[in-house]
Length: 530
Length: 77
Image 1 (cartoon, helix red, strand yellow):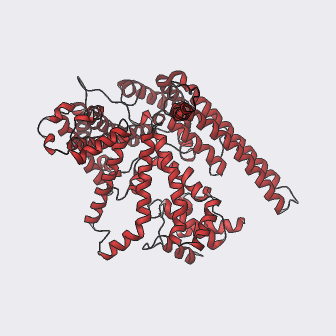
Image 2 (cartoon, chains in turn blue, red; image 1 turned 90 degrees about the horizontal axis):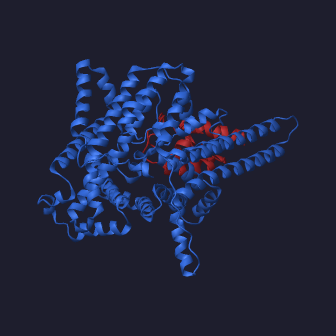
Image 3 (tube, helix red, strand yellow; image 1 turned 60 degrees about the vertical axis):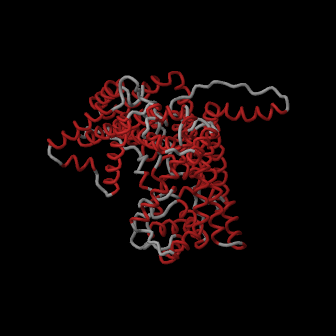
């Protein structure tokens, strides 16, 4: 069962909503937990055991750390204890907590590593073993539990937050379990934080008509993105990337643009659906997309695209590495012996490498994902290192950086960089990505866009027009949101005829323009495969 | 202290009027790169150690919030 199926939208969700609102408030979290377990079992069956292991592991390790903290506080407050003794106690407590958090990291990332990356690394090691005539490590076909890449990060954020003291360990196992498996976010996020989400999930929410309708509108908008845009774009993208050997450069460029549109509509559409579903229960999930194509730099793009993954990597990889004692010392030395710019850039450059390597490999056990991550690392490092130079250049040419023209140029440039990244991301292999890029420069042949060649990639004119029109609709909606319009609130303020006309228009758009019937099928969520 | 913090903020991110601003993080004025430089400067200037746990928007959204955090860390020392 996934979010875009009839069984979810017409049976599972209405029944869960019904039980949620007819039961007393105190029991409502139980409905969400039961629904989440049913949802998970329907998709992953016995693999739920892995989710259970992770949940128990983080629950116990958080409690253990809390106990260490409490015991430290008790000892610290004893009469007659000296400052030095307090310091020693603190250091001892810190050491114990470090061991616990390390254990949780090993268990959780160990499961993820074994199930998702074992074969990838085994193949690498086998290459070396082959040279030494040693028996290779066998290939093992593991089944991946639903949402493992997402819930592992979510679980680790809870444990690390308890370790850091920014979040208290929860004694209520039900609340921890619900945080770990809440059905709207288990498939592909958003990656939630315990402090913001757990109480919201556990608290029984009263029915709020406005919130409910806002949620429903968001679900409808998300489904339009999924069925009308992503599924239609997918037909051409799948055909092209399935066999790009006979494609011209122009067709490759169109395919690259279509894939960017597809992945945006697919992922942000799914986020709209799940955020809307959560809102129908009165729950606010973290925002995962903020109109990324209005970004003026690649840096900004990643603050607006898959926001919760970026925030996770920032809080649990970037900050700890760049603020570590080692880099603080190195930076101070560099400040003395080199220049200030170098001293400032050094920790950032080092920490960013791990962030982008992590971002890449998190997406999948394939070298192309690592290259995809490092591609962004390279862009960011070049931009950071060249900043003094580009600033001088901008000043010398008297370019007004806040002018509309310059902003548009920056957005266009970012869009280009993102598209190149998307081609690497979607290609079956790095070789295929290379072949496709070479076609753009070697045989562009723009005439192939209108001489009928496109039909051989299953792209009909109808699909092309519908995707273009709905891209324009998404652009207008994004533009209005950028200007500060809260569209759902604007719609709510209008009279009943206007409101329901909009709802029916959206529903008809979904029914009429969605990709159903012969030759079409609802594509799997792209991010659910990570 | 506030004056010194504004001075540091201006060196980290020139061209921004920091006084009276209450959404330095939430409004995207300070990005994670800036935070790293800011933390390093604050550590050096006030002889404190800002840990990763302190890197939450509430501690960096305004000059006042930064000053409160610095004072708290100075007291803890």
